Length: 474
Image (cartoon, rainbow, N blue to C red; front, side, top):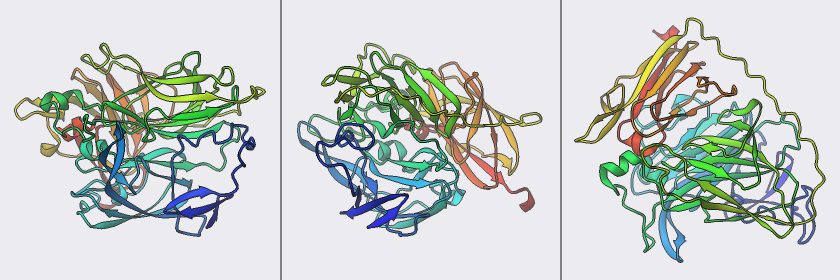
C-alpha cells in the first residue's frame, strides 16, 4: 500500500487500484456515472517506492497472448503482459526509476518519447546504451522536467516491436494546473495487423510497397481494446488525452454533432485553447482535448476514425471506423465555465540562428531505401550543434507520402506553416510540403536521433543523428 499524491493505492498482482471508490449506484464526486471509465481505463504501473517524489517500478517486455479475432489467441509483444503497457504517472520534478527486463526473443530498448532527459537514458541503441539482450536488464533513472502527455516504446526493430504491441502511456502532471478542466481519460490509439487465425501478419507483408505505404493494421485499438465503451453524463466535460502509438496510421477523429477544444499537445499546454472539428493525430504525436458529450440519457455516441489523406491513395474508398462508444447516462449536468487555460511560451529568438536544411527522399529502389538529403541512415553523418545554440530546421518532403517527423530529446517551435505557438517534438511534413521549426539545445549533450515516425520509413533509412556538444569540452 502506498499513499502518494493525495490518494491511497492498493497494489494487487503488480497493478494499482484506488481504494475508496464510490459504491455501486452512487454518483462519484466527479459527477460522472458510476464506473464511467471502467471499460477503457488503463492499468497503472505499481510504484514500489514509498517516497512520494520517486516513482519506481519493475517493467518487463515479454510475449503474451491477447484475443482480437473471434476469440482466437494472438501472441503479442507486451510490457508486463498488457497492451498497452502499464501507465506510468509522475509529477514535474519527480525522479523515475524503471527496472527493465527484456523477456523478448530479440534485443530491445525503451525510448521515452518526448521526455527531455539525458542522452544516456534516451534508449537509442549503440548511442545512448547498448541494446538489451534477451534475458538482460537495464535501469532507466531520470528526473521528469515537463508536464505533458508522453509515452514509451522500443527503439530496436521499431516497426515490428511497436507494431506487435510494445507501447505505453507516460503522464507527467503539473500541480499548478487549474482544476476543473474535465474528467480525464488517457487513450492510446493504435492498430494491429492480424490474420484470420489470430496470428500476427508477417513483418514484411507487402514487401517494399508495404514499407513505402507504411503498414497499417486491420484491427483498430483504443487502449488495447476493440470498440470499448466510455460512460458520460450529458453536459459534463471530459478531458481526452490521446497518444498515437500506431506505426503508420494517422488518426483523424470525428464525433457527430460535437467539436473539440485542444488545450495541449506534445510539450504540454498551448498558449491558448484552439477549437477543432476533426483533430488529426499523426504517429508519435499527442493531443489534449476537451469535449462535452451531449445527447439524451441512454443514447450512444460513436467516436469515429476518419481516413486522412497522407498521400497516394491512403484515404481512397476507406469508410469511417468505430473507435469507441460514449454511452450517456444520468440527467444533464448544469453548464460550468471552463477554467482559463493559458501558458506563457516565449518565442525562441532566431536572429543569427544556424540554418539546417533537410530533404526527405527515396535513396534507392534495389535495395529499397529511404533517407534524408539523399542518404540512408546507415551511411549518414551526424548533424552538429553546441549546447546553448539555436537552430532553424527547414524540412522538405519530396515523397508522395506525408512523414511525421520526430526529434528526440528536445522540444521545438514550428515557425511555418503558421500555427498557435506550442512546444512540439513531432510534426507532420505533408506531401510536397515544407515545415520550418526552431530548436534550442539546453545542457544535455550527447547523440540524439531524428526520424520519420512512420516506423517502416525509419527502419528503411529515413533517420538521422544529431550530436550536441558541450562547447567547453572541445
